[in-house]
Length: 399
Image 1 (cartoon, one colour):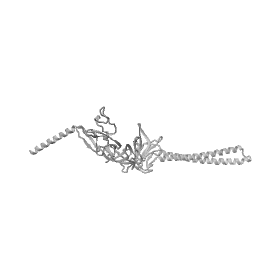
Image 2: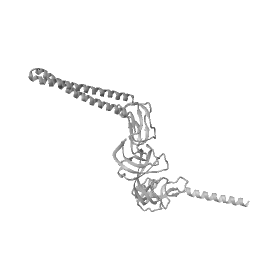
Image 3: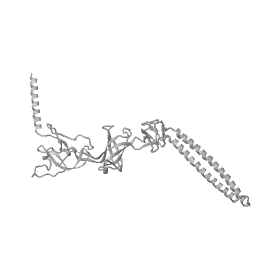
Image 4: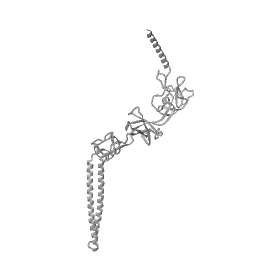
């Protein structure tokens, strides 16, 4: 019975204390706060881009025909000059046979022309020798010379015909060789655009049959950097990026090139900043979207304030600088944060800031010192003042 009585008394005391505490806390508004910290801030450029192989070769066909065989598929490793596909060669083989026959015919015509030249030359020489003795007329000599000249011209034409036939045969043999598609580089097949039995038409433009990435252990990111930030991007800067396929994991790279060609999309101007990435673990794949952070400059051991404190403005506009009633001196507007005054209300403090990493901003001028609490927001009604450190979020500023 005694223990029960003690328990009832303790419960009543605790209930009364809780009531008084809540009543007191509800009497005044509360504020969320965060402290001024000292640490590192990195000036950054944020952008997005796509991951690609450093060298990707599109393998096409210079002839038209039907795909007869495929020797590789997606993700196949290929060596240079390895056969990867074949186009049906029957028509091409027939063209080679036809060109070979045309060459033989041209050679025969050349032999015939040579015989004619020999015969006409013999006749012309004989008539020319008989002319001084009056055995033949001058007209006979002239006719023989004309026949000889025509035979010489016919021989040259036949020689040109042989040369032409040799060229046609080379073309036919080259087209036949093109029926066998070979890999121009060593690498990995990342796309295959044809199937067996499909007709390839190369009449107007070369169709792409395969895309081969030369080396997937070295990748690059083509990022779109806004024109307002491109002036701070230079070759050699460190890059940190993430991809959706590996949440929570960060990858590193380095800026290898800042291209001058503008990319204009709906009147928005961006520039391609190329980032080289080591992909020895083959975790990154072509086409992935990368969220890129380029580290421009690192500022160490500086005073920094959370960006939430810079964005905060009190709900009571009369507490704003310059928001007093008519006749009172107005304070100048400018960059400011708020601390809790002696009356428990937010009090404005003028400051000047430097670089920001998106979560923290460098404090360059102002009366604040490390550890001072800054108002970052209004607490919910009925809540209590919560004083904390860093606001939620992940940045490059570290203590």
